[in-house]
Length: 300
Image (cartoon, rainbow, N blue to C red; front, side, top):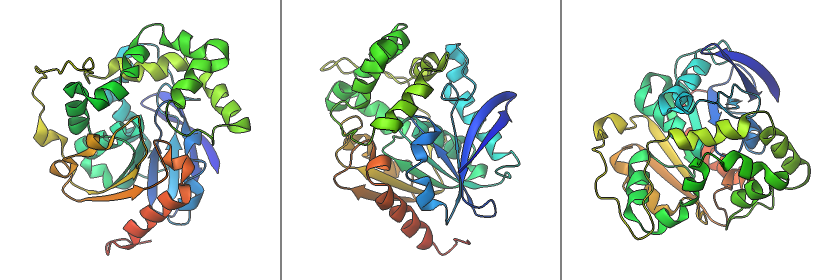
């Protein structure tokens, strides 16, 4: 594993990479409340096929973390990764992009709005905005599972998450899901990243800047604004990997995904949940490798 500090859109970003630079590029985008170290289990399994490149995204880890909510709109988050793709480290052109959790939102954004840069899209327990907003607005099970979003959006959430040695953050991280992998030195590494000045504010700003609306439980939202469906389609090959025990993102958040991603393949992984990348890295890597090798256009 190598580390890099790159200037993206005039701001410093910290980036990890694995594998040989001559290999096809795979951009890895973490979610909340992780950082580029989230890929330490999976990236080595893929480094024989890809040059894996994982940034600390805006607001996270050792990357730029502005305090203004307006700096965390999806277009700006996507622009960071487009800038990364156009650095010498990546080399421009088309790359494979993989996202988990909030990283999936950025990955979908690149695929939808900058298709010239994406030849493959891989999502692991992350959601496309259209079916996710549909479920958030229903007032049902996903609405209930996502009520924590309202807490994170509150102006006091950074202080609350940091209190008592990040007690609330670790509880949020492990709510109804398995975090047996987050112990010892790894947990301390996460706490180190959360403790960097301004990072919890930056991380939670992703939620504050999001236009997604969360209904109250049992009270559906009936007046959602019209969604420009034609602009939200993915035209490249798309692999969705799903840990079936996820209680944060429920399976119904992917229902109808084929309407937005015609070239979609689904892989389900049993005995894994939202943190499938940590729980089943070999199985996730095997699913990706099998998908790529099965494509006749793959050139190593």
